[in-house]
Image 1 (tube, helix red, strand yellow):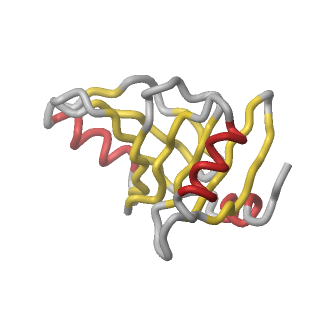
Image 2: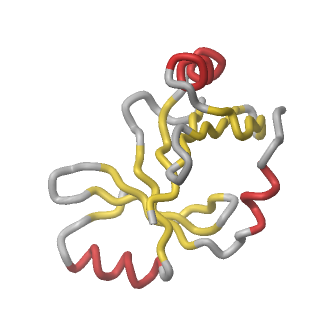
Length: 126
């Protein structure tokens, strides 16, 4: 499933205002950790959420998909000519890999091994 869209937000307050006031979204959470801030905004009744991140490079946005088995997806996409940008890394929910498709679009897949992580952020405003 497409769980969220991950966008760069160099000025997090300005980005939150745009997505809430201009686009009518609802701020779900805003977390400051490790010297950066990430916020989640709901624009529609169903997923995907929009996640805004100070640490993400401008123009490096991602569609982030949840998969049943990250290792299976990684193997299948590699066979089809997709390449990984880096080794797997950890999200609060579980391991994630960023891929580039044959047209060089960036997509990410993660395996939700810690489903309780989502609840830890809901309603949190650091």
